[in-house]
Image: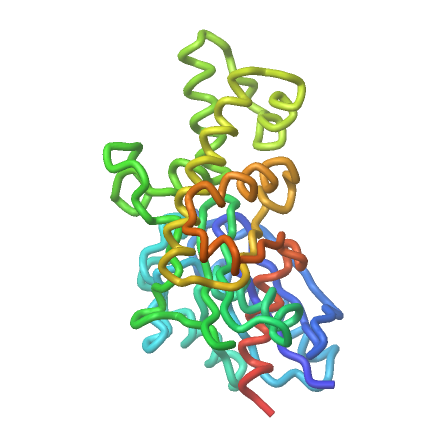
Length: 308
């Protein structure tokens, strides 16, 4: 059976896996990105792990890489993603292709996750799909007529940088009031801690997103308020993309959606309030089924679907 290596580069960690055509991951690893250490540190780690995987597994036909955008696919260069500040302008594909001399493809990380969900679960039943990931940031991937749509400069699907509140908080992209700064996992924690301070309450240094949802479940009014607002912003932002693209399927993934069932249900239930009737009637909503490995699987699928 043919196999491909998928690499999912994130601001916090990098995941690598050997993926079969059926979506089964037969070997995988992950390690911290250590952005402050610079890209060469991470690339040397990637080259080491990929070399070992190629030695241990036969039938690997190429390497797919998902990376936060913006990216320049033609030049194989990382643009200026906010969560990879030391990587700006880095010639990623030159490094990978020089090391391995085999087919390689660079994708936006959300496009990779979208392709992973679509290729291994929905390609036989759906042709028009919008995938949105809600985790550290918010990103999206688009499938049109069964094909990944990347846009003119690999910048399609940037749902997280739709402006929802023009006078809102400053986003890492330089604009104000983006969906990402109002409803991502990072935003939820930031907004909650600011409001705790405003109420004269000290936030524990170890508190993370799980603690926010735990506090809300225990009845804390402030935590519940933050979650309600974020879910409303997210439903509004999703509605804009849906009414532009008219997909038949919306897949919601990322750590916040996968890890917090009630938040997913809130967004799903609020979304119809912002949609035209024809969009409500044709839209199916699903939670991502490939978990945190969707990006790895999709990066591999970008190779497997284009090689024989």
